[in-house]
Image 1 (tube, rainbow, N blue to C red):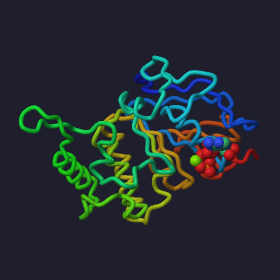
Image 2 (image 1 turned 90 degrees about the vertical axis):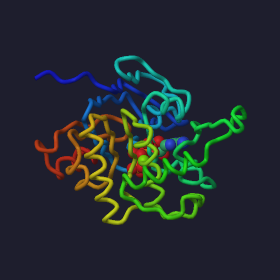
Image 3 (image 1 turned 180 degrees about the vertical axis):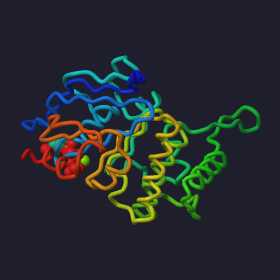
Image 4 (image 1 turned 60 degrees about the vertical axis):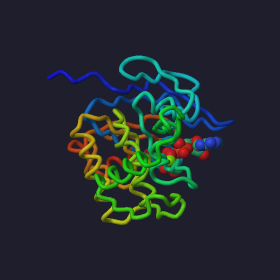
Length: 248
Ligand SMILES: Nc1ncnc2c1ncn2[C@@H]1O[C@H](COP(=O)(O)OP(=O)(O)OP(=O)(O)O)[C@@H](O)[C@H]1O
Ligand SMILES: [Mg+2]
């Protein structure tokens, strides 16, 4: 059976911050319907590589290919416009805005007042926010409240809701379960499985090996900014992944 072409290919990507070589020629692929887990110790370069993919900052060397074409997004918005939704570890939500406003950030729906005056359609945003959050089975009663008033788990749900609403082809999640309670963690895992069933590509970063073994089709291990190995969950063990992470 031949594999479908990769949605995303990361090829020999490098990036440094001052004297720190955060990424040194890292490579991996993500195929449609595939969940790729990025594993690695603190500071291994996991967040840096996804920020290089999603336009938070530029990579210096190597290539990021989307559907085989080289891309170098100038901003996360540009990555979103190309079907890549990223849920950042440091949660890029606008604190002072509502759920709906966060979902539509930079892509607000517009209606015509008096038939000609363009204004932002807040009702459409609130309705979409409500429907999306219900789909996720997260029930938020305060649709108009700024998300600053929400818990970590609720904020995570809003970020995931944004990816769902915009029907991204590649969803990148950096530690999506770290701040969540157990029931919410299970929901996120179920959600990743449903993204996979819809044929989307998922990059999932986690320190939780149990979650990784539960959802990943492939585990890509980073160590100090370099590829340290790649395994299928059914062909490895947690011990081996940890050994790859620490280099022993
Ligand atoms: N904005 C930045 N400025 C300077 N150095 C940075 C910056 N972001 C990351 N680094 C450095 O790059 C390296 C990789 O960091 P990165 O955040 O990618 O690690 P990580 O694998 O996501 O770790 P963690 O599991 O702790 O989130 C680290 O040495 C870190 O200190
Ligand atoms: Mg990180």
